[in-house]
Amino acid sequence: MPKFYLQTYGCQMNVNESGVVRRVLDDAGFTETPDEQDADVLLMMTCSVRSHAEQRALGRLGTFRALRSERPGRVVGVLGCMAQRFGRNLVSDHRADIVVGPDEYLRLPELIAGVRAGTTGLVATCQTDVCYDSVLPARGLSQGGHRPQMPVSALVTVMRGCDNFCTYCIVPHVKGRERSRSLASILTEAERHIADGVKDITLLGQNVLAWRDGSRRFPELLDAVASALPATRIRFLTSHPRDLDAGLLEVMRRLPNVCPSIHLPVQSGSDPILARMNRGYTREEYLAKVALCRKYLPDVSLTTDVLVGFPSETEDDFRSTLDLIEQVRFDFAYMFRFSLRPGTGAERITPKVSEADAGRRLSRLIEVQNRITAGRNRELLGQTLELLIESPSPRDSGWLGRTITNKVVIVKGACAPGELVRCRVERINGWTPVAEVHARTAAVC
Ligand code: SF4
Image 1 (cartoon, rainbow, N blue to C red):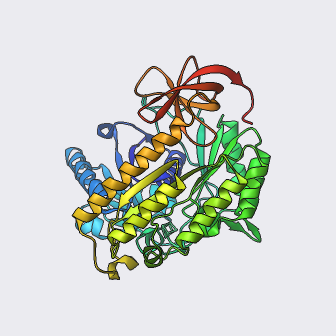
Image 2: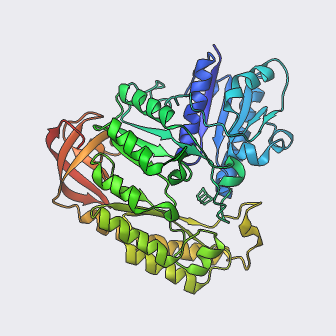
Image 3: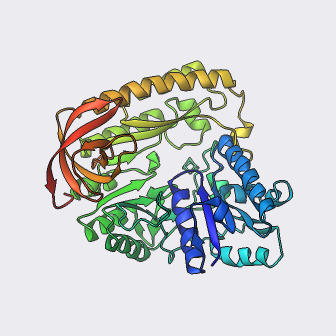
């Protein structure tokens, strides 16, 4: 039985796309191995969002090629966004055997068989409207090399692609146009996860609020999934601020198992930069959405993405971003330095910001947000929280639990994955809350 090794780079969407690949290969009679030396097929799921991610993947491809030299007949494949962006160049310049874009994973067994039969350089990068509706993603291997028996959380991709064309973003260029899975197939997949013991489901999409099925929109999907699975925590990711409205927040307020946490990427606090990014909202409109979130859900946790060093960003623009960060007090932020992606609208925007200025701005931003995140978490001190236990803590003898607002807490005391425990936050370690178990609870809400 041929064995495959799969390495994943990039975002949660890629984690789930790797799950699709695992299922396709499982069904075709392959087995996964955690050991690249043991593999007949070496695959990487790649990310093109930043240049650095691509460079890392190309470096890793060198290792895969070396392994192929050691054992001729091994198959080396590049999957995902880089496969779509580089196409045949990954064969000619980087000597991959197969190159498979995001819409072509169902063809993997056939392509691998083609290489094993002696044909190399097989490239499948057609863009279609595939949603992998009937493919239940398989989970990755645990450290022991086995598929976990009792997963606690699962991702369910509800839509793919994006039509927004933010000028810094490669996603619409490599993942194609927005397309949604049917409500019925999403519910079927969610229910199968619950039957496997999952307690926490994240509805996933590049632009999740753009989901639609006929006349139904995302709030109806959220309502349907959360109502069908009342003992399961339901989250969603990633929301475009322009599409967030009172209808969505009303569903979140009404259904107690919809987690009051929203990831709402702002990217910049400056109107001229937001306009050049083609984000579709102004600073004031963004702040109004934040106020709306907090009006409907007073305890909501808000997280964001921020990009610094976008072409033409001045010190004043950057100060506006810092000011917005201070004003909103996000619970957490993913902060990045702009990385120019070939073919995106940002190529035409000048002047470029120097690496030194972008780096200095990023350091300052991280300093400010880290202080805010630590302060936000300190507000939990002394509170009793309901935590869903996910896994043993990798750094100490405790466990990692998650609040309904999506904060990770270290838990001291006897626990098991999937258990719901009530804990009192006793101290803050760095910025991570540490809590002691007080009681166990039966239901999520
Ligand atoms: S909304 Fe913008 S940043 Fe998000 S995936 Fe679409 S183009 Fe990229």
